[in-house]
Length: 461
Ligand SMILES: C[S@@+](CC[C@H](N)C(=O)[O-])C[C@H]1O[C@@H](n2cnc3c(N)ncnc32)[C@H](O)[C@@H]1O
Ligand code: SF4
Ligand code: SF4
Image (cartoon, rainbow, N blue to C red):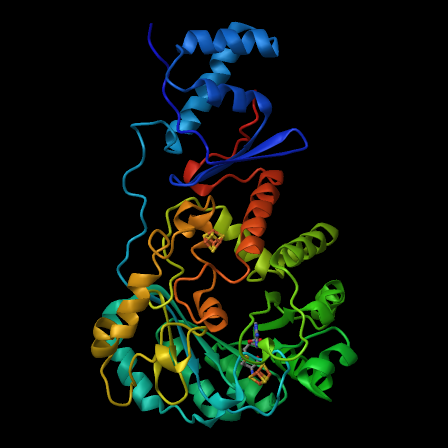
């Protein structure tokens, strides 16, 4: 008797409306299947021949032997491709650890003319000014061999447009090197001259607003901020600058998600973004109430269902990012902080990423250290890289079913709230539920984890 292939059994099974979500933690892989597939997988345990299994399936699910044989063979091919057949697992799935920078954030200034209630830039950071672009250019030159081909620059602050010329200068450097440069601004200082120059420099401008109406927006961003931001958007759009309208979602503005989308459409912006609130800086103070990740995911999902054209405008919002992460099945052991990202603060100090900017994460200053000294030798960067491996970080994450999709959540936010680099992510349970919900959403659209490279549904029995 020839025993059928032995399949790795899933670590997680969840049933919903007669369908099953299966997750293989260590492969990693996930699938949504029907009961017949689950029955088939359970029988692939090394005790039965393929013929026996087909006969049992025919008896249980009433079908001809030929049909079941064909279907089972097709499924087996998919399982093999996904690396689920024991002793035939894919070997090279661990993402490379070598640091290649994909994203550089530059805080051009930490000063700001607003004082938003949710802002993660704390007031104590405001003293730092100003980044010297000559140091930045030198740093970039030295970093050349460590930059990814899809490198991008994000200019943040503080309010970057308090330093318009420097913002535009970075955009020009980016244009010359074919690097996308995006600046986030409160919009209050946008004028025709800036818009014209931004268009010429190919700068992407994100305007941040916190609601679709002035009462909600201004209660977070300050009196008069709604009208100023709206004028800023209108000015940019009139000069055909690529413009993004962005809202950080919290309980106060959650009910305006739909209206905010419509505001963006009416203002004719290129993109609309909904971002989840990070419990950092001032967002940890006062009575500010966050919305869970799963609520945000579901709200954007409903928005997309009700507005078939919305996909074109929602390209880097929370829902789209989650769907992208969950449709990839690779072992990604790191979130990327200090490996793919770095932050240059307004005083020249380098940090592993924009969310890791507490003084204890300072890696060296570009005013007095070379790129090599910082990027290759900083003990802080090495500590971050060595600590945040999802299989080593603590005792719980390595056995979590969704670890290669979660990658430990936002480590900067977690550290700021726990003072412990090895804690589980802030909102761990919410993240896990959101990933599982995203798998279900993807299965509705019949999208598979990319590694399987198969667009057919698995429920073909
Ligand atoms: C820190 S601001 C700096 C740029 C500019 N002043 C602005 O408001 O766009 C960059 C972006 O971070 C967002 N932001 C601020 N605090 C946040 C928080 N606690 N969680 C998530 N995003 C936040 C802002 O709304 C803005 O879209
Ligand atoms: S979110 Fe932007 S505009 Fe608001 S206080 Fe922070 S830096 Fe200033
Ligand atoms: S933080 Fe939570 S959800 Fe993420 S890998 Fe760790 S245990 Fe899993």
